[in-house]
Image (tube, rainbow, N blue to C red; front, side, top):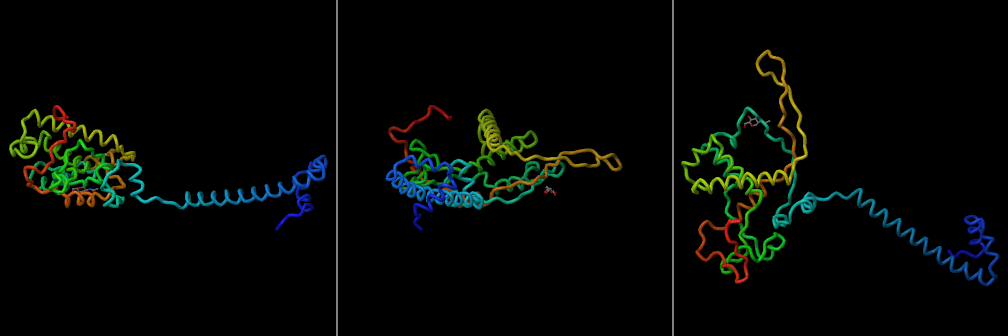
Length: 283
Ligand SMILES: *[C@@H]1O[C@H](CO)[C@@H](O)[C@H](O)[C@H]1NC(C)=O
Protein backbone atom coordinates (compact mmCIF):
# COMPACT_ATOMS: atom_id res chain seq x y z
CA UNK A 1 0.00 0.00 0.00
CA UNK A 2 1.34 3.36 -1.01
CA UNK A 3 0.73 6.04 1.57
CA UNK A 4 -0.83 9.22 0.22
CA UNK A 5 0.68 12.47 1.40
CA UNK A 6 -2.47 13.14 3.44
CA UNK A 7 -2.46 9.84 5.31
CA UNK A 8 1.22 10.19 5.80
CA UNK A 9 0.60 13.63 7.12
CA UNK A 10 -2.02 12.30 9.53
CA UNK A 11 0.35 9.67 10.85
CA UNK A 12 3.11 12.23 11.01
CA UNK A 13 0.88 14.51 13.01
CA UNK A 14 0.21 11.71 15.47
CA UNK A 15 3.83 10.75 15.80
CA UNK A 16 5.33 14.14 15.50
CA UNK A 17 3.17 16.90 17.02
CA UNK A 18 5.61 19.52 15.78
CA UNK A 19 5.21 18.48 12.12
CA UNK A 20 3.54 21.76 11.32
CA UNK A 21 7.06 23.13 11.52
CA UNK A 22 7.35 21.62 8.01
CA UNK A 23 5.18 24.46 6.82
CA UNK A 24 8.30 26.55 7.10
CA UNK A 25 9.57 24.70 4.00
CA UNK A 26 8.45 25.71 0.50
CA UNK A 27 5.58 23.63 -1.03
CA UNK A 28 7.89 21.88 -3.54
CA UNK A 29 10.53 21.13 -0.97
CA UNK A 30 7.93 19.79 1.42
CA UNK A 31 6.42 17.30 -1.10
CA UNK A 32 9.82 16.05 -2.25
CA UNK A 33 10.87 15.65 1.37
CA UNK A 34 7.77 13.62 2.15
CA UNK A 35 8.32 11.24 -0.78
CA UNK A 36 11.90 10.39 0.26
CA UNK A 37 10.67 10.21 3.86
CA UNK A 38 8.14 7.59 2.72
CA UNK A 39 10.94 5.56 1.12
CA UNK A 40 12.99 6.01 4.27
CA UNK A 41 10.13 4.66 6.34
CA UNK A 42 9.88 1.60 4.10
CA UNK A 43 13.59 0.93 4.55
CA UNK A 44 13.32 1.34 8.29
CA UNK A 45 10.35 -1.07 8.40
CA UNK A 46 12.24 -3.63 6.35
CA UNK A 47 15.31 -3.23 8.54
CA UNK A 48 13.27 -3.62 11.70
CA UNK A 49 11.50 -6.68 10.30
CA UNK A 50 14.82 -8.18 9.18
CA UNK A 51 16.53 -7.51 12.51
CA UNK A 52 13.56 -8.98 14.35
CA UNK A 53 13.73 -12.10 12.19
CA UNK A 54 17.46 -12.49 12.73
CA UNK A 55 17.05 -11.81 16.44
CA UNK A 56 14.32 -14.42 16.81
CA UNK A 57 16.39 -16.87 14.80
CA UNK A 58 19.43 -16.38 17.04
CA UNK A 59 17.30 -16.51 20.18
CA UNK A 60 15.61 -19.75 19.21
CA UNK A 61 18.97 -21.21 18.16
CA UNK A 62 20.38 -20.19 21.52
CA UNK A 63 17.41 -21.55 23.44
CA UNK A 64 16.87 -24.77 21.48
CA UNK A 65 20.46 -25.58 20.50
CA UNK A 66 22.08 -28.34 22.44
CA UNK A 67 25.61 -29.25 21.35
CA UNK A 68 26.62 -32.88 21.01
CA UNK A 69 29.05 -34.37 23.51
CA UNK A 70 31.66 -34.49 20.74
CA UNK A 71 31.24 -30.76 20.06
CA UNK A 72 31.80 -30.06 23.75
CA UNK A 73 34.83 -32.33 23.75
CA UNK A 74 36.26 -30.57 20.69
CA UNK A 75 35.98 -27.25 22.49
CA UNK A 76 37.56 -28.47 25.71
CA UNK A 77 40.27 -30.91 24.69
CA UNK A 78 43.45 -30.85 22.66
CA UNK A 79 42.85 -31.72 19.01
CA UNK A 80 43.09 -35.47 18.47
CA UNK A 81 42.45 -37.83 15.56
CA UNK A 82 40.42 -40.11 17.88
CA UNK A 83 37.41 -37.83 17.62
CA UNK A 84 37.11 -38.60 13.90
CA UNK A 85 36.60 -42.27 14.72
CA UNK A 86 34.94 -42.23 18.12
CA UNK A 87 31.82 -40.53 19.39
CA UNK A 88 32.65 -39.45 22.91
CA UNK A 89 29.65 -40.00 25.15
CA UNK A 90 29.17 -39.49 28.85
CA UNK A 91 27.50 -41.91 31.21
CA UNK A 92 26.73 -41.68 34.92
CA UNK A 93 29.13 -43.69 37.03
CA UNK A 94 29.50 -44.09 40.78
CA UNK A 95 33.12 -44.29 41.86
CA UNK A 96 34.10 -47.13 44.10
CA UNK A 97 35.41 -45.14 47.02
CA UNK A 98 35.53 -48.03 49.44
CA UNK A 99 38.14 -47.63 52.14
CA UNK A 100 37.94 -51.10 53.64
CA UNK A 101 37.28 -53.35 50.66
CA UNK A 102 40.06 -53.73 48.11
CA UNK A 103 38.89 -54.29 44.56
CA UNK A 104 41.11 -56.14 42.10
CA UNK A 105 43.06 -53.02 41.02
CA UNK A 106 44.33 -52.31 44.52
CA UNK A 107 44.99 -55.77 45.87
CA UNK A 108 48.54 -56.84 46.68
CA UNK A 109 50.71 -57.93 43.76
CA UNK A 110 49.42 -61.09 42.11
CA UNK A 111 48.91 -62.40 38.57
CA UNK A 112 45.14 -61.65 38.69
CA UNK A 113 45.85 -58.07 39.68
CA UNK A 114 48.31 -57.62 36.81
CA UNK A 115 45.77 -59.19 34.47
CA UNK A 116 43.12 -56.69 35.52
CA UNK A 117 45.48 -53.79 34.88
CA UNK A 118 46.65 -55.24 31.54
CA UNK A 119 43.00 -55.41 30.43
CA UNK A 120 42.79 -51.61 30.82
CA UNK A 121 45.31 -51.25 27.98
CA UNK A 122 48.24 -50.08 30.09
CA UNK A 123 50.82 -51.82 27.91
CA UNK A 124 49.43 -51.39 24.42
CA UNK A 125 51.94 -50.81 21.66
CA UNK A 126 51.88 -47.62 19.60
CA UNK A 127 49.29 -46.98 16.92
CA UNK A 128 49.93 -45.41 13.53
CA UNK A 129 48.68 -41.87 12.92
CA UNK A 130 48.50 -41.42 9.12
CA UNK A 131 50.53 -38.47 7.79
CA UNK A 132 47.44 -36.56 6.65
CA UNK A 133 46.10 -36.57 10.21
CA UNK A 134 49.42 -35.77 11.89
CA UNK A 135 49.16 -31.99 11.93
CA UNK A 136 45.85 -31.89 13.81
CA UNK A 137 47.30 -34.44 16.22
CA UNK A 138 50.22 -32.12 17.00
CA UNK A 139 52.76 -34.35 15.24
CA UNK A 140 55.51 -32.53 13.35
CA UNK A 141 58.11 -33.44 10.74
CA UNK A 142 60.68 -33.73 13.56
CA UNK A 143 58.67 -36.50 15.20
CA UNK A 144 59.63 -40.09 14.48
CA UNK A 145 57.92 -41.48 11.39
CA UNK A 146 57.30 -44.93 10.00
CA UNK A 147 59.18 -45.85 6.85
CA UNK A 148 56.91 -45.22 3.82
CA UNK A 149 57.59 -48.76 2.63
CA UNK A 150 55.69 -49.96 5.73
CA UNK A 151 52.84 -47.53 5.25
CA UNK A 152 54.34 -44.30 6.66
CA UNK A 153 52.67 -42.18 9.29
CA UNK A 154 53.70 -41.54 12.90
CA UNK A 155 53.91 -44.01 15.78
CA UNK A 156 51.84 -42.59 18.65
CA UNK A 157 50.15 -43.56 21.92
CA UNK A 158 46.89 -42.46 23.52
CA UNK A 159 47.60 -40.08 26.40
CA UNK A 160 44.96 -41.51 28.72
CA UNK A 161 46.34 -45.02 28.38
CA UNK A 162 49.80 -43.71 29.22
CA UNK A 163 48.31 -42.18 32.37
CA UNK A 164 46.97 -45.58 33.34
CA UNK A 165 50.32 -47.14 32.49
CA UNK A 166 51.89 -44.63 34.87
CA UNK A 167 49.42 -45.31 37.63
CA UNK A 168 50.16 -49.00 37.24
CA UNK A 169 53.90 -48.38 37.55
CA UNK A 170 53.34 -46.29 40.68
CA UNK A 171 51.22 -49.14 42.06
CA UNK A 172 53.94 -51.70 41.29
CA UNK A 173 56.46 -49.47 43.04
CA UNK A 174 54.47 -49.17 46.28
CA UNK A 175 56.45 -50.33 49.29
CA UNK A 176 54.32 -53.45 49.66
CA UNK A 177 54.53 -54.40 45.95
CA UNK A 178 58.03 -53.33 45.03
CA UNK A 179 59.94 -56.51 45.90
CA UNK A 180 57.49 -58.65 43.93
CA UNK A 181 57.95 -56.67 40.71
CA UNK A 182 61.67 -56.06 41.24
CA UNK A 183 62.20 -59.82 41.35
CA UNK A 184 60.14 -60.34 38.17
CA UNK A 185 62.43 -57.99 36.19
CA UNK A 186 59.71 -57.17 33.65
CA UNK A 187 58.87 -53.91 31.90
CA UNK A 188 60.22 -50.90 33.78
CA UNK A 189 61.79 -53.23 36.35
CA UNK A 190 64.35 -54.44 33.79
CA UNK A 191 66.13 -51.09 34.23
CA UNK A 192 68.68 -50.19 36.90
CA UNK A 193 67.30 -48.64 40.07
CA UNK A 194 68.31 -45.08 39.14
CA UNK A 195 66.44 -45.27 35.81
CA UNK A 196 63.50 -47.01 37.47
CA UNK A 197 63.31 -44.19 40.03
CA UNK A 198 63.22 -41.60 37.21
CA UNK A 199 60.51 -43.62 35.46
CA UNK A 200 58.40 -43.76 38.60
CA UNK A 201 58.83 -40.08 39.44
CA UNK A 202 58.09 -39.15 35.79
CA UNK A 203 54.88 -41.14 36.06
CA UNK A 204 53.93 -39.58 39.37
CA UNK A 205 54.42 -36.10 37.98
CA UNK A 206 52.52 -36.74 34.74
CA UNK A 207 49.59 -37.86 36.89
CA UNK A 208 49.91 -34.73 39.03
CA UNK A 209 49.70 -32.56 35.92
CA UNK A 210 46.81 -34.55 34.49
CA UNK A 211 44.81 -34.30 37.72
CA UNK A 212 45.46 -30.57 37.91
CA UNK A 213 44.64 -30.05 34.23
CA UNK A 214 41.28 -31.79 34.52
CA UNK A 215 40.64 -30.82 38.13
CA UNK A 216 37.42 -32.46 39.33
CA UNK A 217 35.19 -29.76 40.74
CA UNK A 218 32.66 -32.15 42.26
CA UNK A 219 32.32 -32.30 46.03
CA UNK A 220 31.88 -35.19 48.44
CA UNK A 221 30.16 -35.32 51.79
CA UNK A 222 30.38 -37.55 54.84
CA UNK A 223 28.44 -40.51 56.18
CA UNK A 224 27.79 -41.81 59.68
CA UNK A 225 29.16 -45.17 60.76
CA UNK A 226 29.57 -47.08 64.01
CA UNK A 227 33.29 -47.69 64.68
CA UNK A 228 32.41 -50.69 66.87
CA UNK A 229 29.10 -52.37 67.82
CA UNK A 230 27.11 -50.18 70.19
CA UNK A 231 29.47 -47.17 69.94
CA UNK A 232 28.28 -43.67 69.09
CA UNK A 233 28.18 -42.90 65.36
CA UNK A 234 31.25 -41.23 63.88
CA UNK A 235 31.63 -39.36 60.61
CA UNK A 236 33.55 -40.72 57.65
CA UNK A 237 34.11 -39.21 54.20
CA UNK A 238 31.84 -40.58 51.45
CA UNK A 239 33.98 -41.24 48.38
CA UNK A 240 31.23 -43.18 46.56
CA UNK A 241 30.26 -40.21 44.43
CA UNK A 242 28.50 -39.76 41.08
CA UNK A 243 30.50 -38.81 38.00
CA UNK A 244 29.95 -38.16 34.32
CA UNK A 245 32.41 -40.47 32.66
CA UNK A 246 33.61 -40.85 29.11
CA UNK A 247 33.13 -44.10 27.21
CA UNK A 248 36.52 -45.41 28.28
CA UNK A 249 36.12 -48.82 26.70
CA UNK A 250 35.49 -47.42 23.20
CA UNK A 251 38.71 -45.44 23.48
CA UNK A 252 40.66 -48.38 24.85
CA UNK A 253 39.37 -50.51 21.99
CA UNK A 254 40.38 -47.88 19.42
CA UNK A 255 43.95 -48.18 20.64
CA UNK A 256 43.82 -51.94 21.03
CA UNK A 257 42.82 -52.77 17.46
CA UNK A 258 45.29 -50.29 15.95
CA UNK A 259 48.44 -51.52 17.71
CA UNK A 260 51.43 -51.79 15.43
CA UNK A 261 52.85 -55.31 15.04
CA UNK A 262 54.88 -56.68 17.92
CA UNK A 263 57.80 -57.59 15.71
CA UNK A 264 58.76 -55.05 13.09
CA UNK A 265 61.64 -55.07 10.58
CA UNK A 266 64.90 -53.34 11.45
CA UNK A 267 64.15 -50.45 9.05
CA UNK A 268 60.56 -49.98 10.24
CA UNK A 269 61.26 -46.40 11.31
CA UNK A 270 62.28 -43.83 8.76
CA UNK A 271 65.69 -42.33 9.70
CA UNK A 272 65.64 -38.62 10.69
CA UNK A 273 65.66 -36.08 7.85
CA UNK A 274 68.85 -34.08 7.30
CA UNK A 275 67.18 -31.09 8.97
CA UNK A 276 65.36 -33.00 11.74
CA UNK A 277 66.01 -31.79 15.28
CA UNK A 278 67.94 -34.44 17.19
CA UNK A 279 68.07 -34.00 20.97
CA UNK A 280 71.28 -34.39 22.99
CA UNK A 281 69.70 -36.87 25.38
CA UNK A 282 66.41 -38.24 26.68
CA UNK A 283 64.23 -35.15 27.26
C1 LIG B 1 33.64 -51.40 45.73
O1 LIG B 1 34.36 -52.57 45.41
C2 LIG B 1 34.31 -53.59 46.39
C3 LIG B 1 35.22 -54.69 45.95
O2 LIG B 1 34.96 -55.10 44.64
C4 LIG B 1 32.86 -54.03 46.57
O3 LIG B 1 32.79 -55.02 47.56
C5 LIG B 1 32.02 -52.82 46.96
O4 LIG B 1 30.68 -53.18 47.04
C6 LIG B 1 32.18 -51.71 45.97
N1 LIG B 1 31.52 -50.54 46.49
C7 LIG B 1 30.71 -49.79 45.75
C8 LIG B 1 30.10 -48.62 46.42
O5 LIG B 1 30.50 -50.02 44.58
